Length: 358
Ligand SMILES: NC(=O)c1ccc[n+]([C@@H]2O[C@H](COP(=O)([O-])OP(=O)(O)OC[C@H]3O[C@@H](n4cnc5c(N)ncnc54)[C@H](O)[C@@H]3O)[C@@H](O)[C@H]2O)c1
Image 1 (cartoon, rainbow, N blue to C red):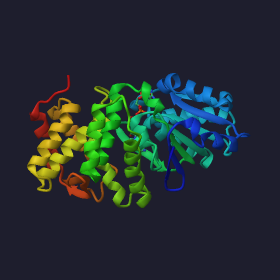
Image 2: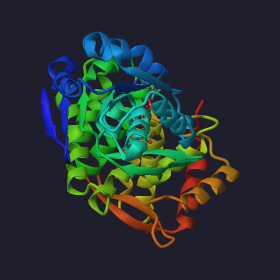
Image 3: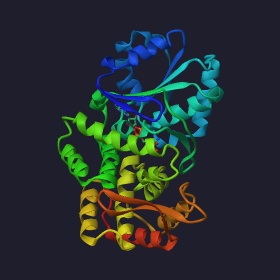
């Protein structure tokens, strides 16, 4: 078992049965417990949880439709109604069992209901384990705008058990790898190389690598929990990535990680275009990422719409689109103000690349 100190809670990495999850449940023995799942974690993860922890057999299970388009205030509203129907009080406990959608939404739902009740994250996707369950960001989308409504709110604990990865579909595994690659791009060439090696050997997951990736996120968040400065480097690939994810939400449904990977290629291109990243390094990054994460076909209308969406990015300040840029692998800067026309030119460049998704 590996233990990590987060902002004001504990993260544990290892088998759930050997963790302090059971003891924590004992502390809530007289409370009602609610487990929030989606249809896939209901089928693949909930049986293990309930058979391993007998006391959860009486828990209420709320299940949400899977899919980013359901990360909405309307669905959250239904859950608040259900919690009211079950007469859930502030002393009860919510357990979020799922990927980033469930931990983001479940955390948001718990934080707003009766001004906040305790919640635990049990991430079941790779992306959830290395990223979404850590750092206290919770929320829902507003139409096509990602995570537009939300609050910073920490769980009482996060338990990361890689056992859940055995049922995760391959494309979702790659979605998680994208956020891990981001951790490499922004902090260390050596970490990046280890992640690329891990991607070649998906059957055997290195706990040490998971631990190191979790630590990257956790350390950055601990230094800047409310994203006033340093934490912004975690947004590398996300300014464009969120727009890609939002724009294609109703059509190609590109996963969060895949969208971030596309965002990282494009933001690396931007880094080269403004004279920060050298041309050879950019070519390496483009080759690495586009060989794993294909680019969607871009149209002129799509490019106009995506550029307009960038204007609404929540990281913007004083009307400027702010973006992370790479100087080098392991050296990322944030709050770079980029003109709208440079984004337009970047999208046009990738439209012309014609590496299209099948
Ligand atoms: N809060 C943060 O700091 C943060 C950081 C990164 C991403 N996010 C958010 O996280 C979300 C993406 O997370 P995600 O990729 O985990 O998406 P997700 O929760 O939608 O999960 C992806 C798919 O995998 C399925 N799944 C999850 N675990 C499974 C398992 N063990 N077995 C079988 N199927 C399983 C889900 O049902 C879903 O269909 C996005 O909404 C993104 O905005 C949040």
